[in-house]
Image (cartoon, rainbow, N blue to C red):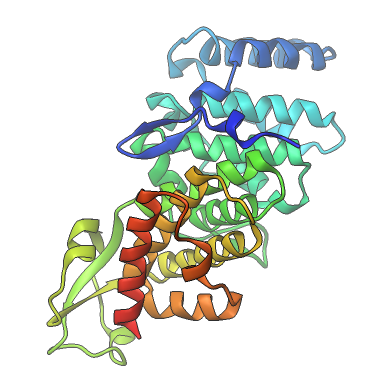
Length: 327
């Protein structure tokens, strides 16, 4: 069994958790080139230029639509060796740490290959799942990458099905955390933590002018509200109305966290801390829904959480206080 500690090589910028040091782009590229021995001249050029960006640090100007199509082809053709997709995902995870990688993401707005592949997360091999989770984690390295993952507007997977970037991000995070693979649990907890740290899209609504029943029919102009304002505000004259897509994601991730806490006998302190701190954030956004989640999972947080560390106990105290007030 893998050791969780070996996957704890994360860096933190404003608390955001990423895994830059878990990657070795040069080695991954060397191995990818050996796996892709039958490319035509056009494909060889794409691979060479992609290497210049990922390994040699050239500017994003070298990445064009042909390279994106080449990457998409490698991800979409399931007949190819799985190791090809694994190495490619790890290289994308390395690129995701760069500020200018945003331009490459923008090229994918039409076909959305870079999110369609993660959408099949539950059907991927464990190594592919690790690559996907690592890629999404490292996209939080930059503000624009994080915003791209949290994008809530829907788009079509096919004629009958719609989804959004944030739904797929949450899906990967939840599946990873409740898996039985230590490294995936590590990445899943980091993804959930990063999502919870993002500023919430919300509106402060005066209670005397609006009631809960009437809010669905009111035109609301959502904007980012500082988390501290939401979490510290004790003014009962106002309430915060958040986007439904964010509420749905918070419920989904809360369920994953509660299932992880219930099933894991000896959770890693770092993972448990991220989980509990994420629940604290969600408790301020969806307090009643979170209480419902606790009841559904039938998890005794008072028994399972305290005693692991001082900082977890401190977060648990905040969480318990918020849930008690909600009841």
